[in-house]
Each structure stands twice: as C-alpha cells, then as structure tokens.
Length: 224
Ligand code: AP5
Image 1 (cartoon, helix red, strand yellow):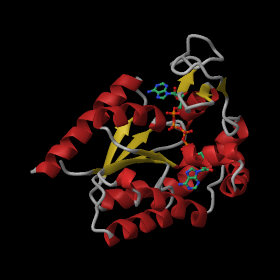
Image 2: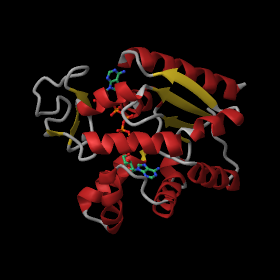
Image 3: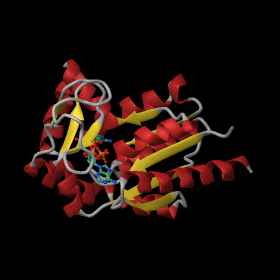
Image 4: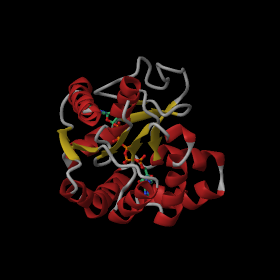
C-alpha cells in the first residue's frame, strides 16, 4: 500500500484535532500534533516546555529552531515510516520549506494538504466553549459536543479543563498569527497542487465524511 503523508491545516479551533482523531482510526495513520507535543513538554517541565510556554500562553508561534528539529526527528522515526498525519505543522513558509527539504532528502513526498476553513467568529465560539481532557487531550464543546458531565472526560474519566490559551486575548492573538503566518501556506500548497479545502462550518460527522472521502481518493490515485 502506498504511504499517505498528510497535513491538516486550518485556523485555531477549526476542528483539526477533532477530525484527526477520526481519520487516524480510519486510515491507521501515525499522528503528530505539534501543539500536543509542546503541551506534553510543558506539563513534564522539560527545557523545551519551559522555552515554549511563554510563546504558547501569548498565542505566538514557538521559534522555528525549536519546532523544526522536534518534528523532523519524529518524522524520521520508525513510527512515521509508512506515512503520517501532521496537525499544527508546518505553520509558516520557513517550516514548510524545512519539511519539503527533509522529505526530498529521503525521497519521500507529501500526498496532500487538507485545509479546514472557518470564520474568525466561529473560531471564537468554538474555542471559548472547548474543554480538553488532561490525560489524553480528548476535546469537547460545552454546546456542540458536550461531555456527559461538564468536568469529566467520557472516554477516560480524567478531568476536563479549559486550555490556558483558550482565553479571549490569546484567541485574538492566535487568529492574528494564523492570518499573518499560516494562511499563506494555503497558496504555497495550492501552487504545488497539493491543497484541498473543506468548509469546517458543518457538523463533525459531515466534515469527517468529506475528509475521509478525499483521503480515500488520494490513496487510490497513489495506487494507480
Ligand atoms: P495547537 O495545539 O496546534 O493549536 P491550534 O492550531 O490553535 O489548534 P487547536 O488545537 O486550538 O484547534 P483544533 O483545530 O485542533 O480544534 P479542535 O478539534 O480542538 O497550537 C497551540 C500553540 O502551540 C500555538 O499557538 C503555538 O504557540 C504552538 N505551536 C504549535 N505548533 C507550532 C508550530 N508548528 N510552530 C510554532 N508554534 C507552534 O476543536 C475546537 C472546538 O470545536 C472543540 O471544542 C470541538 O469539540 C469543537 N468542534 C470541532 N469540530 C466541530 C464542528 N464541526 N462543529 C462544532 N464544534 C466543533
């Protein structure tokens, strides 16, 4: 079976993590989410976590020299040998160039870049109501996808919290950073014939069906 090397991109709160959980099940894909990796480092109190925390709390990007090394090491590991789903990386053109160079060096190629699009207004609504489980990062929304109990994760019973960066000031900054630094990647990947756009303003199941169909088609095209 050909390898699927995929990127999920989109504004904060567009539903990348929510969809990734379903897609990694569908396609048995190893999942690498830089935001999750950084939050784990913050919780563990590592040097990386200490360096990253201030940037994350402010809603700014963690410096490229920290991020690029971290993710390229993961992609070079055995876990990513047969394909991967990336979420949160790349986040600017420098990171995209570094990924392209690293993949070219080992003779691999991206299969596709899936962009979930959502208005700023909806992003604010989604992030303001998000609750995340402390153990495994399972995500809920108080209105759109409520847990059975507001403080407990349905899936693993751990506590549900509001992420430190899901406050109004940081959400505003994350959106500014997205538009200035990450949105240009849509053109970048469109020019390379890799981009597919999806309207994120539908139910989780509707968005999932569209993404699943697109990835199934990409895999079939690669098999031909
Ligand atoms: P990161 O963790 O990557 O955050 P993000 O991109 O801001 O994305 P989110 O995780 O907030 O949103 P999501 O799209 O996954 O939405 P979700 O599925 O949870 O990055 C955090 C920080 O780390 C950055 O600010 C930066 O500092 C740093 N960082 C990370 N990567 C970096 C990099 N490469 N370079 C530099 N710095 C980096 O959904 C949101 C909510 O909506 C949930 O409540 C969910 O239940 C709900 N929801 C989902 N789908 C739907 C739907 N269809 N309808 C209704 N509600 C829905």
